[in-house]
Length: 163
Image (cartoon, rainbow, N blue to C red; front, side):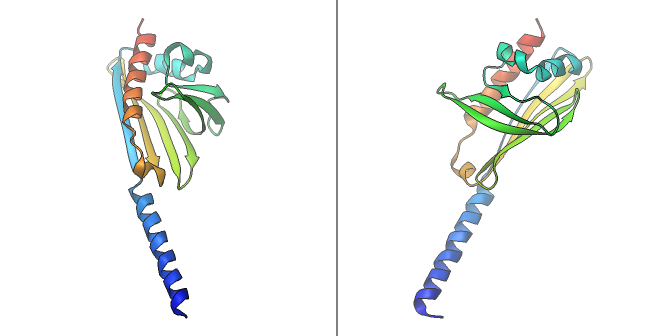
């Protein structure tokens, strides 16, 4: 192998190693939870009512598709700069009154695994929103605004359900 070829092989291997390292470092999560004075069934009814999202959810609401396991949906995400972004999800798990898990993104670049989890607690419900982000871009992205938005979203859900 010539000197020029071996240098390009070293550069290529180095580049692959750097991208792999960035990908492995590109893992972040956000988590918000709130106890709501309502049953899981009451909260689930609100989460499954796509038309009603705009009444209480000013962060993330369905634009098209039906919330059913296996379905693809399009959501509008309102960012802090009020510049909305349309994103796609696939419903990967749906257990009535317990879990709504949706997944989307571009594998290796930026993916999101978003879930609502409902847990009954003595007549109340602990509602958890948890989202895992993965991919090369995630290493350079700060999800703090998403964390804050989900905390606000849970409060809005509570205010909507407990009237």
